Length: 320
Image 1 (spheres, one colour):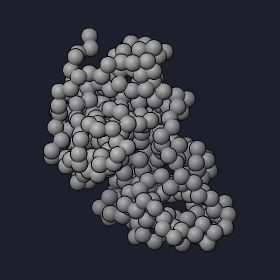
Image 2 (cartoon, helix red, strand yellow):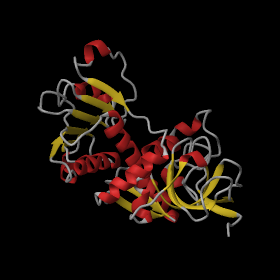
Image 3 (cartoon, helix red, strand yellow):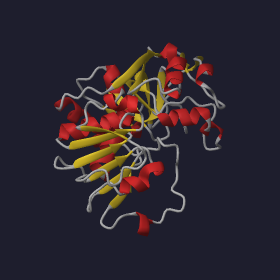
């Protein structure tokens, strides 16, 4: 039985974590092409922090908005889709939490095109650490970097949830992995990598044999990362941990070394086959996603505050 109301986070203006609270709002009404998902758990993401603190002021954000770009749960109303009642699903991107209500709620009305069936041995909590993080890592490694087991991979910015996921996938494949962090105290967290390196900002010339590089720091270090790979190597820019969003004055002819390739991954276009492949790979390699902390939905303010203040290493999960 679907209730008439639900608890949700609803934002209309820039909001600090300590001011986030749960509101009682109507459960969304199902319409053709959309399905109602009973949310079991969701992960927190840096892009949601950007929305909450600043981006919500933009005209293209539908306000008031329920944030959250991913979730896992069960189909509560399949509408006219091919899903069945109670089916286990994951949902991510496609406008979640920006163009329409997202996952910070007990129920989410989502376009069927961005809801995907899932078969997995993972628990709901473990499953919630996968959708956006592992989809982004998977696309970066396999679609963009064409990663294979013979590669030596550099993961720059390895101590974020995406970094951990990329390291785990690459190691399961059989690659050698070098991972970096700019904080000395976090070197010990890179336990899955073959080598943990303190990132001083200048790493070019420090390594040999790196064939692929995933830069999660972003434009702040991208020029230097291009100098870290061997000729024929590929660099994928996926993250913006460095807080720099564009490469001003970038001269690709002079700044991309001859024979080195530069690409980037944008995670807005998930599909069923890729989601199926990811969960199958995780299960077959017995990967347990790295979860930094778990909070109940009633503690969402504390979860967001800990994310804002970088108190958690690994994925933050909120459970219903």
